Amino acid sequence: MADIEMKWYVLRAVSGKEAKVKEYIDAEINNGSLGGFVSQVVIPTEKVAKVVGGKRVIKERIAMTGYVFVEAKLVGEIAHTLRNTPNCLGFLGGLDHPDSLSESDVRRILGEGESVEEEITDILIPYSAGENVKVIDGPFSGFNGVIESVNQEKATLVVSVKVFGRPTPLTLGFMQVEKE
Image (cartoon, rainbow, N blue to C red; front, top):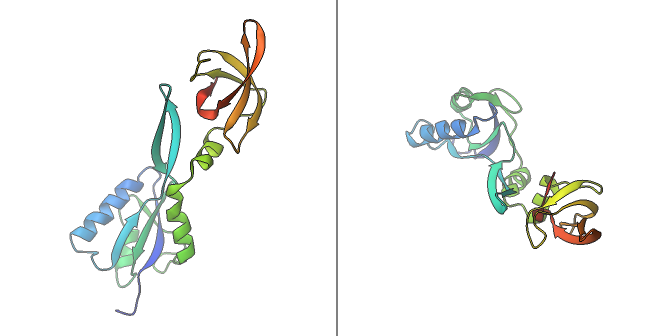
């Protein structure tokens, strides 16, 4: 059994119960029943930027809902034990002899949690020309306007607001406006 190496596998979990599956497997590792055969359990997360109360807040959320990654040696009853974990739906790719992930896939998936801020804003804050927005930050806070153009690369918008009855273009960041 010493010649079998640790490989990464994917367990399917009930959506929203990924943390419970991880907690249960970690407890089994600590009490010794999986010790030596399962080295780590990971739930891939990503950082998300949101505006809460006018302030920018970065939180973590599960990147791949319904999946838990396990580094293990699937010998004997280990695959059966993992598959029968509460809130677990089984392995991705088979019952007792699932396909393992390649090292490049593991690095890519687990590296996603350290995403760049530009990627976050591209995904989470889609704006388009012609939309009505409200300015929530800066000297024009409280003004309403219409988006004239969107620059995804710089994460900026050109918003036309009325100042003293005249349309005035403002260049604002995505985090300085919210949809009406």
